[in-house]
Every structure is written in structure tokens, then in C-alpha cells.
Image (cartoon, rainbow, N blue to C red):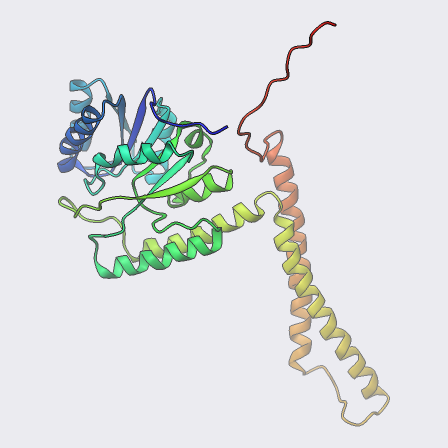
Length: 330
């Protein structure tokens, strides 16, 4: 049976903030306007990720004036993933939104996301079909999104869109660290939640400057490799490391076996066969054999680590449970 979000009791909106002082008051006004226009009960959670401007003072002022607004302040900058994790932990709503604080995300899109949840989806990801960003950033983003879709199997146009919507049970299960906020939808999909996307209006930046540079894309690619490994082999690392090790060991063994035959034929005086000590194949074969054994040994160690750390944690996700009928005395 699918659940719907036709009338959530409370909607939590988590907004990570890092030096966004000029936009916060206007964003709060827009959120209140969207809630009033559609009769929504909302709470807004601003998470100040070590801002050095006046962001925290504005958040405190907004929270004092409106009980629906609360703020969380970090002692220093811990990153967007940490800010979202803190906001998700504090969220009390049945539905949780994440939204950037730079006014490029439009709170008026909230009803469209709720409508998508009504169709049985658990996660709704924004899709900035028309982007107001420099061409080089748009191009790199498209390549990155294509790679994420290819490697993870979750086909979305804009994995890193800052506007997302979740059922509360989804965010309570997510474990965010580092810069893994880019792959929230991927992790949710790996748990079996239904993920879709909704086209959103991407507004031009009016205040400040983008925090994303070329280095972020390189880090994103490395994180993608990590996510792909965690999803595919997080609980069975030996399957990957051991497979690579077996292939390397077999290639090394075949090379050494061939060289052994060549050495024997050379000792017997067969024409065309000479010493093997200076042949490159000998070096490559020995190296492949050593690397193969190391990969297998590393896989075993990884399996032991997983087995000891996982303890009683289960790697499945229950959707619902049917209760047995009460026994009837005959």
C-alpha cells in the first residue's frame, strides 16, 4: 500500500546557510507567502555553517519574530553535508524539504513537490531545466549528472539540485558526511525508496557569488567513485577486491607458466628459446601475481572490518508489516 502526502501535518524546510546574509530575510518572506497561499503548516530550520557575515544575527532576529523559524549555528564551517544532517535531525515534519539560501530556489515550487509525493514517490528531486549559470559550469554539470546516472542506475537530470523533498522516514535513515550531499537521491534509491524529479525555475543569483569552482567537480568525481563502491560493494568488499585480485593472479600465473616452459625448452637446447631473466613479461607477471595476492588479502581484511563493525545493523529497509489476525478460539 502506498502512502501519500496529500495533507502533511507539518512541513520542515531545511536551509543550509554560509554567508547568505543579504538573502535570508527575503527568503523567509517568500517561504511564509508560499505557506499562506496554500494553507501549509511549515517550520523553517536555518543551519548556519560557520558564516562570517551577519547571517546568524539575521537568523536569530527571524526566529524571534516568527516561532515557525529556528536556527542552528555551527562553531565553524563543517560543509553542506553536515549542515543538512543537523537540519534533518532537528526536523519534526512529515515531509522535509532542503533548499539553498541564495534565493535561486523558489519556495513557490513547494506545492508541485507535494503533488509528486501524492503519486507515491518518496523523494522528489528538482530539475533546473533552464539554468542561469556560466556555460562552463552548465557543461561540467551535465557531464557529472550523466556519469552519476550511468554508474548508479538512477536516471536524473540534475542530481545536485539544491531543492529536494523527502518523506521524513527517508532523511532519518540517511548518513551524510564529507560532501556526500550530492548523492542524497542516490543513497535513497539504494535503500529502495521511489525517486522522481520535478522541473523547477532556476532564478539568477542576485547576492554573493557561487561557492562551486573547478576543484569541486574533481572532488565530486572522486566521491562518485566512493558512492558507487559503497552502494555496490559496501557490505561485500571482497567481491570487488577479490575479483580484481583473482584476475591479476591468474594473468601473473599464466605469464610465469609460459616463461617456465620457455626456460625448460631453452635448457633442452630447442632453437628460438633463450634466457628469460631479461624479458619484460617476467617483471609484469611477478608484479601481477603480487598485486593479485595483495588485493585478495585486502578484500579479506575489508570483509573482517565490515563483519565486526556492522554488528546488529541490518542492510535492508522495511516498507510495511502486516499484523497477523488474532487467534480465534473454536
